[in-house]
Image (cartoon, rainbow, N blue to C red):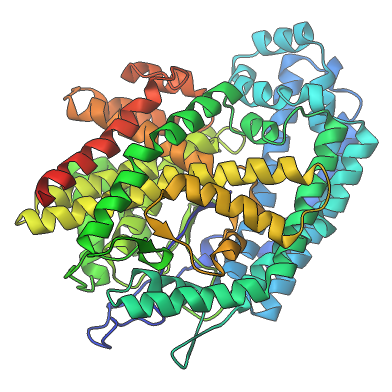
Length: 609
């Protein structure tokens, strides 16, 4: 699973004036997965996988309910090993592809591996379906008879949450086989189209990330030029992106209908192991807070910029006279590791190998996937972090964020392949916490009120982007999928839904240029992971509450924190948060995080007075 985060790098590894380089930026060494695409190791694993998938089905299909506890443990550990080998192959193929999505050989290898793995793993489809048909009492007896098997109870519980919605074996196998030419194919079309886009700005041709970066430029004219260049291309490509979105939304609606899912969101909630009412409480708390968060902050920002109304290209503008110092890679590394070590040296020790062993890919390169992510790969290897690093303070925060994911993934690997994967709602915990540690260290070291104001404003903007913007994205998806159930949506209809949520979330201080209505087209989460986005807001709110407990001086906080990360996906959010005295199912829980953001805006208003 990729944990994605938007980032906005510049077009090369120097600052805007062409000055100091960033230093030696690390690139991935993928040899810990496989030495080469045609090496004997990957051939060996593919051959083993082909035989083991068939053997597994021959040994267990139609027999699961009759297994004793010991035999069921053997079955599950064999299945886990298969998943691990599949994960290693697809991690290697996927990471190579994301390094250069426009390279035809990498794209072919990735696609070929997807196809081969899909074909090989078709015999495994029976496994989850048949497990879910076992009577509760029979499965409980198996678990009670073997302590090692009982460790897999959380995995089995999550699997059985899908029991009411599973289809016949034949239909499930069809969906499995069809996926490679269904959603996966549309996802690839989106990725390759995005990677190939170019934008004309003042006579210069730029890729997507470099053009998005102009929206944070100190020069307002450059921001406007960047925004208009983005709008021109997004509007031109609107029919294609509308077709992709319509097709994927309809495919989801058809599958949900066959599965008798009552809402489009439920499959995401089930995979996140979170109750729909908890997500609804989060959504309502944030939407109700729009006026005292985003509306109030952007009105304050308009005053700082000397404007009565903000244009949309002013949303991420730096503060007037904001220091545009480029932060070299070595300084970024020191900043983040110092913040991690100040919390607990174990956290710094876990992060250090990422810098030393080729686990980070940092430079901007042609064809490289946009944004940033951490990918856990498999539990007998290690995570990899991708950045597009160009030396802005935001890039340092992104480094802190993705390393938080990496630390979490290393610790959770102790749970094994089936229990290490953390639900998205909890997967953002360590990343946002790492970011908060780094921010607080920088804030404490701020030399004066001007520096403090710049740091606070940057953090408030990041939190608004994480909480307000992502909940607005979630509302956009909810409304889009609801509207799509009544028939195909025209580009204008999708645009209208987008603009509706933008007006609601950003507030009355903004003007919206022509073409902004098409800016929904470049958000990859809508394509790759429907309804993923609320996890960002969930994680931010959860971390704000956790950090408040930390600041209160709980002497055992660090131990509890590491235990929470080690748990991976083996515990429900209620169980994980209970040691901290927190409960995400309490609607008042979300007010803690919202109040923290609001208090920072309070301080900014005081500084500005």
